[in-house]
Image: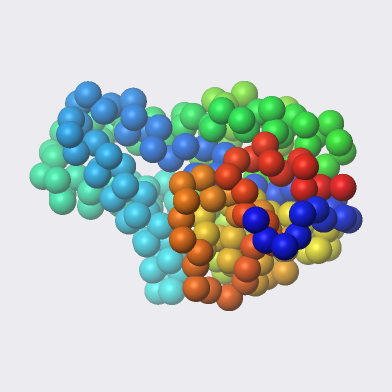
Amino acid sequence: MSQKNHIDGIKACVFDAYGTLFDVHSAVGKYRKQLGDVADQISLLWRTKQLEYTWLRSLMKHHVDFWQVTQDALDFTFDMHQITDQGLRKDLMNAYLSLKCYPEVPEALSLLKSRGFKLAILSNGTPEMLDSAVKNSGITDLIDVNLSVEEIGIFKPDSRVYQLAVDRLQVHPQEIIFQSSNAWDASGASAFGFNVAWINRFGQSKERLPGKPDFEIKKLMELPGLLN
């Protein structure tokens, strides 16, 4: 935890989706038996390439949506592991539309909602991907708006993505607290001007990047206690 132990003046809580609210490894988890001993390797490489492709495409100015990026990353991963089962590929992609949320997410969001905070998702995901994940997790009534980078056509951590939350929620950056389990995303949001709670679920090392999270927590249920 940083030196801060609480924060005042917050009007909106904005959440990253993948890895923060939704468990990106739960897709492979559904097909662990079919994938065997390499299941964890496949899940990790799939996620790594997915993120790499968002950054590289943004730099190259060749945008495609996150659904295409996710397919491309899976195809790379299958090639690396010499997997040719197209039925399994289809199953894994479909599983990405119904990722499980982390166990504490519904309760934490419900508590924040009851205290009058605006709740939004700000994600690389397409609107269709986000709508599906939210519905599958049973949190539709808790989220006020899903914000997708497809509105502007570039991925995080471009500052225009974070500005999207300011514009759509009609609040100042300092009235937003942003949550991400991705350290690079937490840094990007902080550099933009958000208050940031980094949900360090897996004991990651701190990034050496501009922007420092205001809080470091392990689970989302710690967030309500930070907000006055």
